[in-house]
Image (cartoon, rainbow, N blue to C red; front, side, top):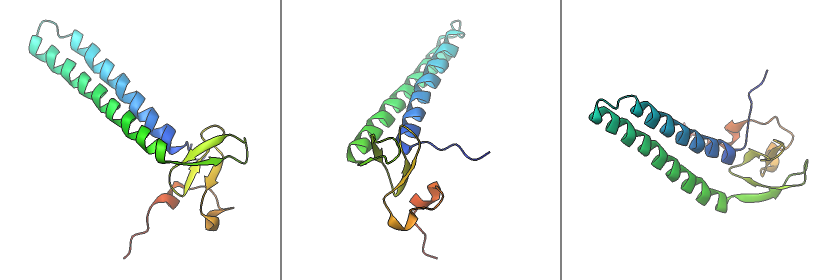
Length: 118
């Protein structure tokens, strides 16, 4: 069984959504410490920080998304956004590339990493 890939924009959005849920869970845990106002406040503030971090991540991916290259997926025909040399279609997970040298090769996210000069 291979690695499950998804588009970079969707990965970052999923991470931001998980930060919101973690923030709510942390705040909910704080309710169990009603007898200790300090601990309850600590959990509430920590949960709020997770939610603020999520807002920052959503803002960041929004700005990245506006600068992303838009391409038409050859498989499903929908317009999708690409970050980097290789990415997946946001709708059908078809591997896409902007680099002619990578056409026909198996999809690997390592193609987006810059090669280090040794």
